[in-house]
Image 1 (tube, helix red, strand yellow):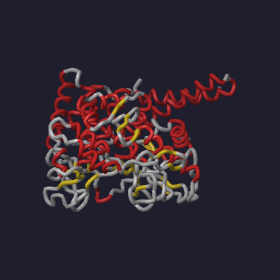
Image 2: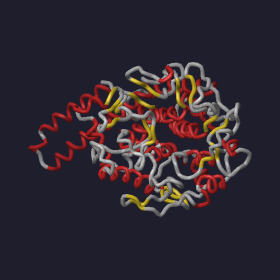
Image 3: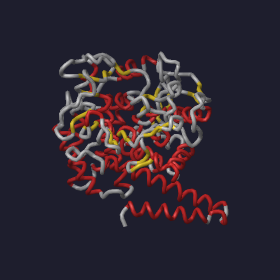
Length: 449
C-alpha cells in the first residue's frame, strides 16, 4: 500500500471513528481528535509536497515559480523556476522521504537532477538569480535591473541545501556524493562580495549589467535574517560580525518595546511605518531551518518574536477592524500572496480582505491550536473550492467572493516544512547540526539552548 492509499484509509478511519465518538468517554474523544488531526496534517503535507515533486519543472527538477490550475500564466512562464522557492522545495522532499511519500532512492535521483542544474546554471560570484528558465539555466530577469545575483533568494536555497547535505552526509556512496556536491556549491557563494567593497551591510542584488544600481542594503527586521546568519557562517566568503550588528541590527535600533494586541513585538518590523507587524512569511522563511526555539541574541528572543507575530495576526482577525466577511478563529492569517489586485503584501494595516492559507498553516509551530482550526476549516467538504491538487490555493477573499485555483512556490513550500518542524523538528535539527551554522551563530553573539 503506497502513502496515498494510506492517507485515504486514514481519513476513512477518521470518519468512522468520529461517528462513534458520541458514545465514548472523553479520553476516547481525545484519541479521535488526535487521529483526525494527524490525518489532516498528513494530507496537507502530502499535497503541498507534490507541488515540488510532481509539479516540478522537468528539466531542472526545481520548483516552478507558479502553477496555475486554470492554465492562465503571465507571459507564458510555465518553465520559469525559482531559486528561493526551490530551497523550500528541497526541504519539502526531505519531508517526503520521512513521511513515506517517496523512497529515499527516488529522492536521491531528484537531488542529482537538481544539482546537475545548479552546477551549470547562471550564477554571479556564486550567487544565484531569483529566476531562471528551467529548460536552459539562463536568467529570467525579475525586473529590469534585477538580472543578476539575488543574495536573499540564494540564502533560502542554501538553507535548504545545507539541510539536505546534513541528511545525506553519512549515507551510502551516492548520498555522500550529493553532500559533497552541495558542500562545493555552498562554499562558492561569495557573501562578502555583497558588502559592496567592504561596507558593514549586505546588499540584496548585484548585476553584471548594471552593477549595484538596485541599491538595496538589507537592514532592519524582515524575512532576511537567514542571509546574515549564512553570510557569517560561510567558511570561505564569510562576513565580519559588524556587518550583522551595524547593517542588519542598525546598531541596536532593531529592538522594540512595543506591545500590539497584547503581544511583545521584540523587534521593530517597520522603522518608518505606522504598521506594527509585517506579513507572516517573515516568521517562516528564515526559520525553515533556523530553529527559533531557545535562540537569542543581544536584541531579542526569536521564539517570542515569531510566536507574538503569529498571535498578533490571529487576534487581528478576531477583532477584524476592517469588517471583512469571514474573518475569525477559523479564517485568519495575512501574508504576501495573490490578491484581487495582483501580488500584494497583506498585513495588519494593509489588509485587502484576502486570507492566505500559508500564513496560518506555516505558523503551526507557534500557534498549533489556532493553525489547526484553520486547517480543519479549509478541509471541510464544503470548502472544496479552496483546496486543490497541491493543497490550499494561494489566497481567497470571502468578502469579495474571490478565489483562483493558483499556487506560488514560495507560499506552498513553507507549509510542509514548518508542519514537519512542528511534528518532529526534522528540518530544524538538520540545519542547526551544520558545524558552520553553529560557528556562525556563535560569531554573531547568538546563544542557543
